[in-house]
Amino acid sequence: MNSFGTHFRVSIYGESHGPSVGVVIDNCPAGVSITPADFETDIERRKGGKQKGTTPRQEADEPLIQSGVFKDKTTGSPIAIMFLNQNTRSGDYDKQRSFPRPGHADWVANQKFGGFEDYRGGGHFSGRLTVCLVAAGVVAKKVLGSDIQVEATILEIGGEQDLDKGLEKAIAAKDSIGGIVECKVKGLPVGIGEPFWDSLESCFAHAVFAIPAVRGIEFGTGFPAAKMFGSEHNDAIKDSSGATETNHAGGIVGGITNGNEVVFRIAIKPTASTPQQQFTLNWESGEQEMLSVKGRHDLCIALRVPPVLEAVTAIVLADAMLIAQKKGRIA
Image (cartoon, rainbow, N blue to C red; front, side, top):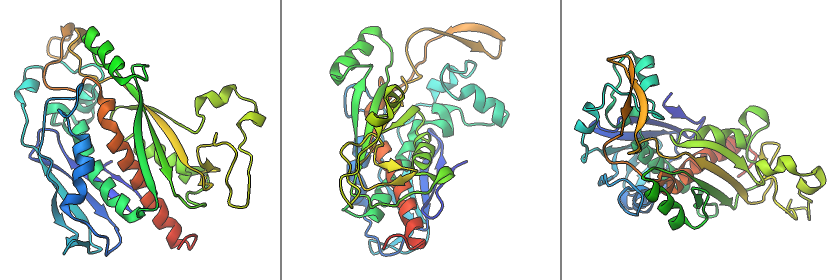
């Protein structure tokens, strides 16, 4: 349940309030340049407390490379990267242990693991583990090289393209709020991806839903395509390079890249932890009671998603590129 990928394989471990969280990357090619400084930009972008609407919990998030890198080059052996948890307040969760929080995995985790789960801060279900995805994404981007560019941006918050206006809606309501994040990939060669089960869309969707707050994904024109005629939605091919007049397909046809820009968007739900009073079960009394979630939480988790979305996108592409290379489809 903690691993993804066929050739470029990523495994994550840890809990939100445990000693550390981390990632192990297997089958990364040898000779890729990796230094701790390479992680700084994307990890800083993911951190809380850096912008209005994010959690005040701040961690140093220094990447502690345990194996797989020697003299700033990957060795070909598994790469292990650890991040210490140093700014936790577990008491916030002890006080509300009797109340599985609405919108969180508290209840299902308790049922699945028989009460042995680490419930502090959401445990292994926490968004804290997305720092592991970001670290793996940094390595994946290195594998892809500088010719392939992956960029994610926030399109809207709470239905507002003016992000500050969207945040103000949540602040005024004393509630959390969701958003939409778009990812674009430039420079991909034609022929990446497989038909059906391993279509590139399938792989993106699989990886994207590892981001805890994701509720939907669409490629190219997306759901509005259901209201179009085929003659409107079809992308006319202009020349032998595969360039098209439009990009309703989002750069992927038949599960395979067509050489155009890959474009997809994801829907991010409102942060489940909200100060609003909500009904939930008290599993000690067996009765419904009112609960207001305490602790340090993001007003809008979408604010921190772009570097995580870029990371899982790069992970999928690194894996797909290595598969294509092994099959001799690309150099």
